[in-house]
Length: 318
Figure 1 (cartoon, one colour):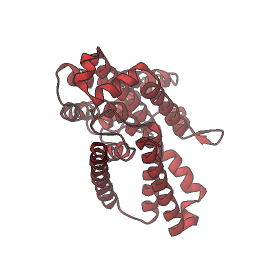
Figure 2 (cartoon, rainbow, N blue to C red):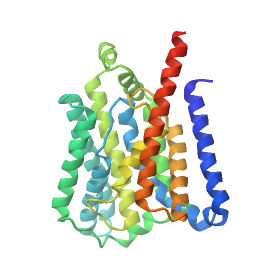
Figure 3 (tube, rainbow, N blue to C red):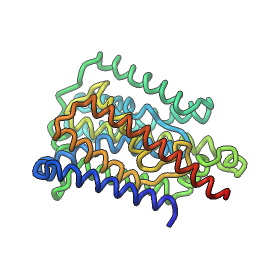
């Protein structure tokens, strides 16, 4: 049994414990159809942003601009939808995805071309993209979207919420890219040892740019889902999702230094935090207390993972 499998198993136990705990505290409310439906519609909004960060962390980087990219893509889609007839919905989705690709490429060029640390480059573009959104909307919400788009985003297919289906499709795509393609292997090799990857002939510039483009496109998908759920676009939607997205990846066992991490762990991390968030809402815990809890959990998980890494290193030397 390798360490990755053991970690996923521990995370599964953690998820089950959270689920059982809130069932014990208030089983009727937590397991009610309304609460389960609410979780199914809420989960894809932050899960897609966590999924967007995932490939960049495999390379040893990070994309802190995902929320700003999601909002910018949603705003572009909203303006496009309002500019024409109902069939402009398809054009709006295409515009949002293209914008996600462009913003991702900008991040990729800053990291791979300008050699900026990913955390600083994407922190800068976070503010830059958010600034564009604010100037574009003058700080107000974009409303009056076609009813068909909102109905689609809040609808279901054979009882499965459409946003959840979108997330599962994106999840499968990220899994195939990061685990079943040469590009995914190159991401992990670069994350493990960038210098060795360059000497091994891996086209590091291309790998990094494509990685951040994938991140941008996935973030744009998240923006489209948020747009359909809120039925409006705004420059500051989902600001609390950034911490949550990073926490999900760390909790999922993704190495912040790059090289390791799986979407299976990410699924469990998403579920555990959704159960936690929903349970705290039922207990009427305010948002600030939840942010405090998420921050504590993030630090705790990183410290525990660090200590475990040192223990394994010591055992290997022995």
